[in-house]
Length: 166
Image (cartoon, rainbow, N blue to C red):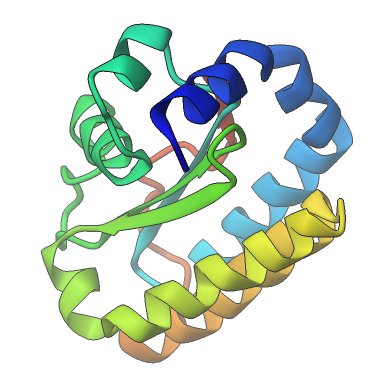
């Protein structure tokens, strides 16, 4: 994709697009899926949705992966008791989903596994199925995290389960 094409995608995709794709009912379903999973595993999952990047970020060549890493740090997702924080970052303008995982979580699951969860989401998004594909991907991720970090649900929640629209 050319820089000019990407620039216009980010120019015309607004927060309203994010709200249409992820209305309150969808955000609630996502929050419930995250909360349900965190009762079964010790990892901490945070989901952030960004309709588009600020235009100066696009012009400077910031990739969705770089943006996800910035948010991972900014929102202190790395700051969990067992180093098992996970950010799911959705960028609507770039049609991209990125997962950034802290050390323990990243060691527990291989790159192909992270990619398969992202692919579940992006495939559904192409069909306009934002809620169903996001919830299905989170449920798949919860199953994988349960196998790697089983828990009885007694540990306190360390990160908000509420999806954040930036």
